[in-house]
Image 1 (cartoon, protein in one colour):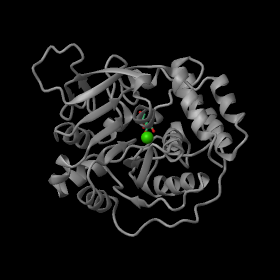
Image 2 (tube, rainbow, N blue to C red):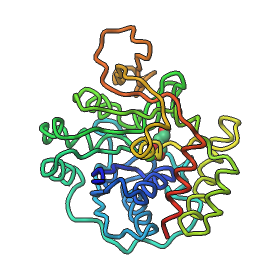
Image 3 (cartoon, rainbow, N blue to C red):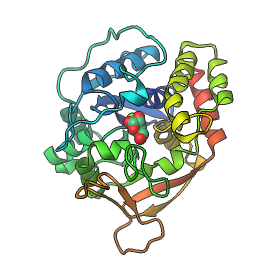
Image 4 (spheres, rainbow, N blue to C red):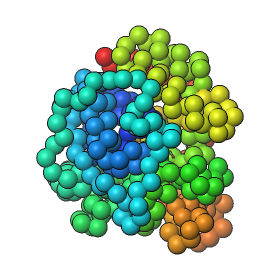
Length: 311
Ligand code: RIB
Ligand code: CA
């Protein structure tokens, strides 16, 4: 079986970290590189964190490139109140030894996509790097096999404002450009991720792996969930970003439908809102496969099984 070649664009973030580890642990996927973007925490920290995660997995061979340090137009909004000052709070890990690769992440994305056929882009943060790459080299739109992204919400609404999910809110112009680019998209919105909660038994199963990665993932979930438990009054927090990788590995864990998705970029009140035509009331093109359901037990079983093969 030829592994699917993927690029991961990310703003780690504890949930990004678990998504990256899941990808690195899965032989079905070949991670061609990781590009970092400002989001949960500033770019310097997302770029540090991405390398910490690679070294935790024993994969200092993975190219990591730093990308955009701010959104296309708006001022950067970060989420230390969720992820902690470092963006990876919950466990102390060594500072990375592997260097960042020379050059900008956007150029790496373009060079890789122009040189290879059939590459899938996994977007786990604000879509600034992807939009910049499309602006700089529009031909990549015909070359990207699919963009699988975590972002948006429809019946669930927003998590950073009543209307908008964080990734789309940080850079709504970038999100709008990506959804208008004609690239096949799979979207994992809050409606799905909020069905996948990091409950105590699920965290315990990770810790029971007895490896470094299991301990780190458990500690990250325990830190990450404290904010969501207080806000939503449920046990556990939504494990957002690994849904992107899990859909590539086991799409049967999810349900969804093709819909039109547009991103609000004009209204201050609903800036970054994903307007999902779930019931097909408009004639707008169905530009995304929008996920709606998840087998949460199967999802956490997959994560736990795969992370068990790492150091
Ligand atoms: O709204 C959740 C998303 O915002 C996740 O990608 C999380 O890591 C943050 O980036
Ligand atoms: Ca993220």
